[in-house]
Amino acid sequence: AQSVSQHNHHVILSEAASLELGCNYSYGGTVNLFWYVQYPGQHLQLLLKYFSGDPLVKGIKGFEAEFIKSKFSFNLRKPSVQWSDTAEYFCAVNRRDDKIIFGKGTRLHILP
Amino acid sequence: GAGVSQSPSNKVTEKGKDVELRCDPISGHTALYWYRQSLGQGLEFLIYFQGNSAPDKSGLPSDRFSAERTGGSVSTLTIQRTQQEDSAVYLCASSFAGDSYNEQFFGPGTRLTVL
Image (tube, rainbow over all chains, first blue to last red; front, side, top):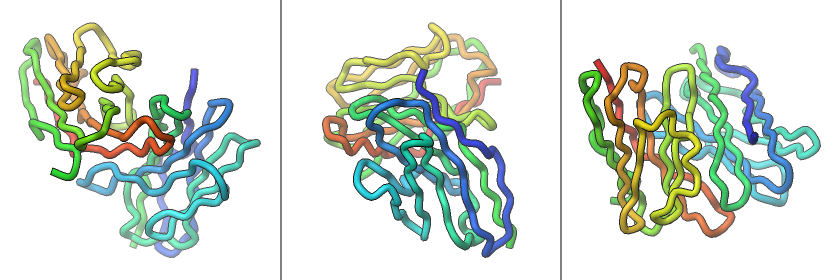
């Protein structure tokens, strides 16, 4: 069965630290890849997405993710985190016109 | 409105009662999804509609759960004989399926508490 794995359930960092959140998926073939974010008290919203082309994707608020097809990975990165990045982050994958499968999420706490 | 709306925003019910949750997707979005979000469980897929049909109901946890969608728009998720373990936030999302850009837009959710 298709699945999405997020390696870290809970991450705590200090401001200005670098961030990398892992995501691996089990689909074969062509996939669409997403990172969604849920800030405290807010809706889930799209952070960035990959459909094709350059495997390094830039998103909002300085986030980026790299699609490595050989590793079935789509890790999220940010060089210097801020307190306002405290949120829950979800990786998601689908094949074209199929339902999106979400990972279980990573709770990120940034210490001021 | 411009976004996905859900009602009610909060629902408290007694064990054994039936509840109905509503989702209004973004106009023109043909795909609609229901998820359940519980603490520590992440986002659990429940059911997916393409138009009015549900090609994938695989995530519904039991036969107490059902959903329908009418007119390719509004959807209702019904939970019969609610149990305490049904307590969670129920999220609805819609997307403009039919092209490769299956970005989902989420509603604010309905927080269900079963006493």
